[in-house]
Length: 107
Image (cartoon, rainbow, N blue to C red; front, side, top):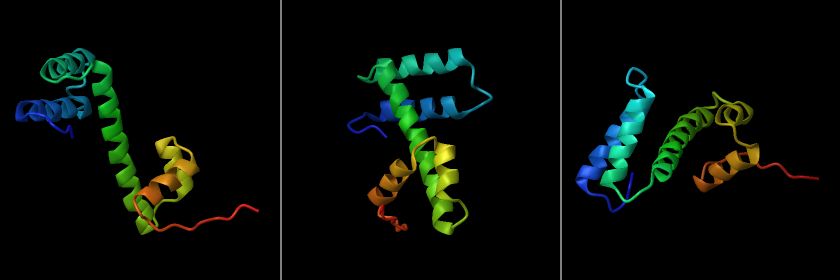
């Protein structure tokens, strides 16, 4: 969520997030117009908004996968393939979130 945003801008952000996520409403022109509206209401560029949306959905996907990892239902290799990241980056996420994992020593 954006820091230092007005309530109107926050409402617009949630609307934009729903617009991008909703497949029935997923017409590209509608998404573009929502991004343009949000751009006018905030001091961000369109690229910054798209980057924030990408980060939001990546974090959401990471959290879903971390829940499965903690329960032992998903392996690191499956998660890294789903998220399209390297195992090293995934272990970095685990360390950042203070989640216990097995550490391997290089010989």
